[in-house]
Amino acid sequence: MIYQRVDKINNIVIKLIHVSKMKIIKKKFLSLLLSISILEKIKSFFRKEIQKVNFILSYSKLLQKNQDGYHARYDRIQLFENHESLRSIIQDIDQSSKNVNMMFYIWSSGGLVDKVSNSLIEASGRGVECKIIADYVGSWLFFRSYQLKRMKRAGIKIVKSLKISLIHHLIFSHRLDSRQHKKIVTIDDRISYIGSMNMVDPEYRKKDGNHHSTVDILIRIEGEEVSSILNHIHSFDWYIETGEISEKFKKKNPEIKILSSGILFPKDLIENFLIYSIKNAKKNILITTPYFIPSKTILKLICATSLSGVHVSIVLPKENNSCFVHWASRNLYEVLLRSGVKIYHFYKGFLHTKIIIIDKKFSIVGSINLDIRSLSVNFEVVAVINDFIFVDQIVKLQTRYIRCCSKVDHQRWNHRPLWNKVIEKFCYFFRSLL
Image: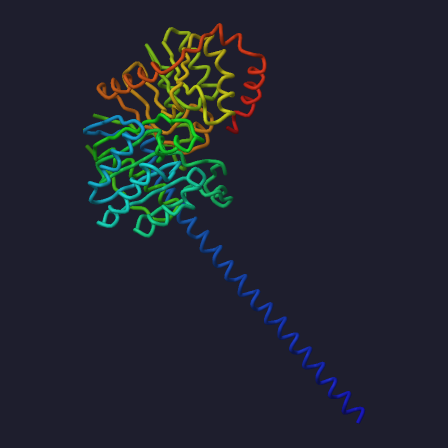
């Protein structure tokens, strides 16, 4: 009797051990399946990234032919400011029939920007292919907005550019804080916009009371060749983010030159062109930029050029939207003023325009600031235009800006408070992080 009970207990214990072992085996098996699934996903991810790298290597052969930028002919060029830019874009989208490609650092809903979104939704509804690339950080709020959901539901393709990813950083060797700072619009492969203005309605932002009134520009260019080049740049960035690409080059009329920075483009392409342009200036240089903390090379060159007899003028916003940049840039005023450079403070809002005019012969217009971040970190694009009529238009715009400026007086600047000088030096010390 006792032995029977012991046998029963033994059988129960054996069954419990067996069940326990089966549970452990099952758990390990499920864990193994999960590990295999994760490994397959990792393998798939890297397979896609390797495909991108292979594509980039083949694509680099084309880029090697354009180490000094792209040259393009155009039919017509126009200059637009602030809301005029947005209204012109809306009108062109409303008349579009094939495609609309856009790339911006900041896309901020509200005001005329919502009308741009509505025009895109209507265009998509009539069969126009609409693609938008927006920077992951600069357009952070847009990616969480109701407007984005409306646009996606309408069939508009929208992707985040330069998501903060260690994998992308390791594969493409760009800094984690690199930003997609380009501003591009192309419509129907024949109309293009490029400049310094984000997809933001300055008047709408001004109304909320937390922003300065922003003054900015975009240029509108008609010409298939210019659109082809900008579409090419857009397509490449689109491929990097999505793995999809399709674009062909076309050719044909006055010439424009497009310079871009970013993955695969020569690292110092835009900076080297700026250095070359400043070094070869004969009469005058007029610079308008919201952020002025150039590399030591460019700073020394500007000063040397001014001392050689070239008239150099720099137009900056009196009040900046970045406190650190505001003070850091002022640390350079003394050496600039001593070299004969004229500095103007624009007081009618936050001047976000980025233009450089050399000898009134050609202008450089685009997304680039004269600061270390734009020159060395961000991905930028500029247009170099040597059309006499258009350059004259840009010169007149700059003259209008200067009329709304106060000129920095050298003597008065020397007598600014000591604490100002301390703050300037402190902020300038962190210039590479700004």
